[in-house]
Image (cartoon, rainbow over all chains, first blue to last red; front, side, top):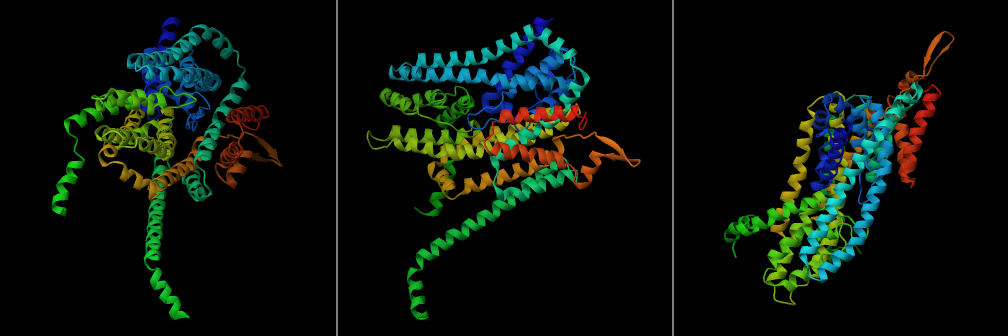
Length: 269
Length: 285
């Protein structure tokens, strides 16, 4: 039974890694495959969605900018969900497992990337040798190792770790569990901070306040706030475009009217 | 040439002939792979070459020297948001085709590298802000609110999420391939890209403001009796401003990160704060 569960979760992790990169589809498809995992494990898909929502919340706003990956949310999230499902645990347990795993898993990516970097010279060599077949072969080997690494790691983690984690989870005392729930609720603040750091400009302060007020006082749902955001964005876009056009026509007229300006000065004198 | 003559030609500009269709389709599917094979030295350089190899092969089918020269030339450093790469890729391929047609020595291939280096930054600026930031954020936010309630409508959210991703990939590549560099260069030069990124950032900031109030939880349970009156800490804070503490916590995280503190340290700090306050009986689940 555990073997089957480990295999399914490992498959889910590998699939997540694949879809996360291929076309960046994973980025815009949160939760899509969660019910499938639950069904394959013979668990309640609705409950799985709730666990996954709690995990997604803890990771909310954590994103890969450029090449820097602060946490491997894909790997950590999938394993946290998987463990919580097979051990029939609460969402808070899923979060408690997902966060540390995501932090550890970054090491794996860094090692893989290091290996990819050493391979660059070999790719260069194949191009110098004009050998497209070997070039493609190395590409597919890298791809296979990339996916398989995560598959095998998840497989072993579930197969060897489940008993230990079960013992750990059942021995968590009540106050620790409520501390965990509170901490999980606070975690989105870190993601929000990361996002703000990424886009921040003091000119955006009014929009930040507006978004906060719309939610805190008017209790609007996220969709409505997003639409307000689009309104603000469009207004600023049109203002900027107008300023840009005025600037450009000013530049043109000053360039054309050098002579008339001289005349004006002459008459003013 | 009169306007009447120019118009039908302009329409033809956007029509792909059979060969071009095959080429752009191939490019579209291969471009899905850009995120694989990141390296510290070249980032997506190797992936770019693997993606374009069959296309270059088609373009330079009569001239293996030029093909391998193009492969070598394109192994350079490259890094952008994968979703946006269609635009750069379409342009690069149209330039390579010009290179293939031009007599030897008349086309300066440095222009292709220059275009790639010049565009990857602005494209990543928009792409990271829009896809990784705003769009992903909104989708996850709506997804979380559905998933929390166990609502299967969350599956629909994902499907809608794919639309801009695919559209930018396909139409971005098609138009940049057909319209050529001057339009894209003009958009960058006119500041259109910057304005668009700014508008997108504004959407993001507004949504983040809203998310802080709805998603960050700081539940105070501390209660005491003063002169027979119940004194509940949460109520006091709510009277000052709803969601005051989530806001304060998020702003503190933002300031720390902006000062260059390690995100992992900030994360651990927040977790510790949650535990300590709960043990002290101030917060609770």
